[in-house]
Amino acid sequence: MPELSIASLFPFRREVVESSHVDGEEHLRVIVRPDRRFRPRCSTCQALGTRIWKRQSREVRDIPIGPFRSVRMTVQYRKVSCPQCGKIRVQDLDVCDVGGARVTLRFAQMIAGLCKHLPVSTVAERYGLDWKTVKEIHKAALEEEFGTTDYRGLKLLAVDEIALKKGHRYLTVVIDFETGRVVWMGKGRSERSLDPFFAAMPEGIREGIEAVAMDMWQGYINAVSNWLPHAAIVFDLFHIVQNYSKVIDQVRRDAYREAGEDRRSFIKGARWLLLRNRENLTERQEVRLKALLQANEDIATVYVLKDQLKQIFRQETVPLMALALDQWCDLALSTGLAPMAKFVQMLQSHRQGILNYARHRIHTSKLEGINNKIKTLKRQHYGYHDEQYFTLCVKEALPGKSTGLEQVHAS
Image (cartoon, rainbow, N blue to C red; front, side, top):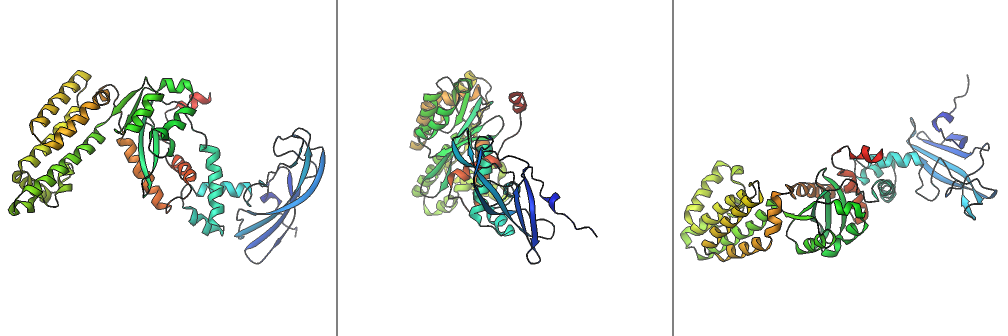
């Protein structure tokens, strides 16, 4: 009976299997040496080496094969004198990267693919690897694919921040509004946080940016105004309503302090009842809301004005939107409530950015949804101590929808 060969399981171009043996029931050990039919090439420049300087070996892990859960490979290789680099270099190998993790290239590719769907700890446990090794393999693969910011096709942007850890540690997130792709993430949420993103952006792309959606954070406003003076800054309904929620809550607290004991029971604990959209209330909550609005005129007034505030952003042209904004501000000021006066002042100081929504129907609510996915990703992986790795994982998980521009640029 002919002896079975395992050479076909190791189809490397310039290396051959010299020997193999089974170590226990589930372990296979293989020795691989350079194929002597090929002259060694420099791993840096691919030039043919002129002289073999030293012979060495390295043990690496390979993918599981058949019944063998663990395949350990001893790879023999040579260091050669490279005429082009003028230095002693390791020969180029098809099996593994001598300067990288102690796994074969095909095992590293498999691990990186699994890490797209499974936590690093799970992959490490499954194959008996250290989690740091798995993480570095995944990170190296991500760095190759997402390490360089892809600015292609950018016209409309959305910018927001996400809290990475407690203690006011933030990351600034920039997405392509049209595709939902996470384009860039950087430390902090100050004016300087966006400088690296815009500084590396090609000038032609920078000039083609039409509008940027953001909240009313002054640092982002200053950064975009500085780098993209021609682009429209757009403040959307989401963050304006979010700011108005603080007005409602302040009026509720003031009403609670001024109310008698018989009416405080209607106001206490009603914060989320007032902030939630009315269509999302249960029947029981709707009954309680009506009782609350009847119990306090100020709360009823700010609650009704919340719905009218949303009508501003339903106008189709700038003149109509400006008229609706002015009318709402007049109504708000007529209430005589101090929190309302402060909110109106904020709206008027950001007037142009609000009206720009009539020209560019972009918003940050899409980015808020992405931020929720980022938070879920962080929880699933029990947090990230390596912020660069975290950024790469987010880019991999949120590549956005295809618009066909990739094929255009490729051609």
